[in-house]
Image (cartoon, helix red, strand yellow):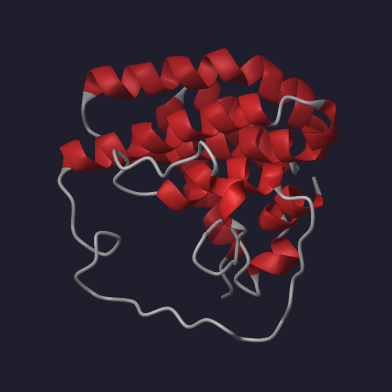
Length: 191
């Protein structure tokens, strides 16, 4: 349980622990009956890491830099994508978060479940504004609205007033959401 929680702990994200699998060492048996989803265009690390970390009995975190990652400008991550590819990536990530919610349904992972739920809501909003296809936009709104009652029960008390307004506004009238976001960003921008 601790290993899984550490993957999502913001204080470890700074040190690069995060959801990537490449900065960790594993015993081979942890991968028994688990495989990377090769159909994913992005996020295959993030997809499998939860299942791996749930199996870990013992783990150690160090601040020592033992691994260096090479970023290529022509990698899949940095390549320009068409709208069809963007739609696919967003829907893949949303489906991945849906699977993760099922994994975190147990009481001991309640805080991870809540984090995942807020990520789904934010990702749905991001997908909505980066896609122009009206049918898919409507399906995203429906998906958002279907999750909203659970989201508001679990998260509403810990959200800032601006976030409450933002999430409620997107549920009711997504186009107005953009206006609220722009106004809140202006308030945060130093003069």
